[in-house]
Image (cartoon, rainbow, N blue to C red; front, side, top):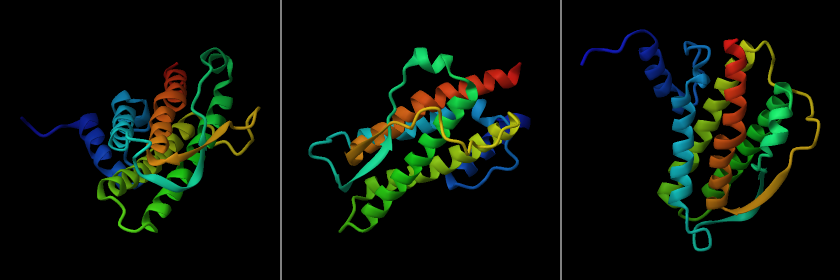
Length: 191
């Protein structure tokens, strides 16, 4: 087997650098449009959820954390302007990043945090940073900056009290709103 060339090499290098949370300036501009990239983050989120599955007995958060509601009304979503979808995704991603960082801080301050839980929290922090960077590249491609405006309706939220629920929201957000938005934004960019 030879050394990968061209776009394959760039994809492999990007996938190695992204988990470090480093901006991937040499990445293909539409790396987020490659379904394998997003699927990798979804898989990591599902693994973290599975590790903490025993919600009732599993590790609890010492305080409730606010996260974005991941329910999607597909009928309403398809009728939203892509710019409104972008606002909702950016706000959800921002709130989710804050929630994961808050959980990381709570875990650090706890006595003897489980090593596997710490690993999954660290992966989530890194993954969200990388996804944010990839979305910024996509937003630049779409000639729009990450939205600074408020959405047409306030972002729906909920509170979680266990790591399992936090990781479930993380996985559902990636599988739901983020995947729907990037799919539509990538299709529009191909026109």
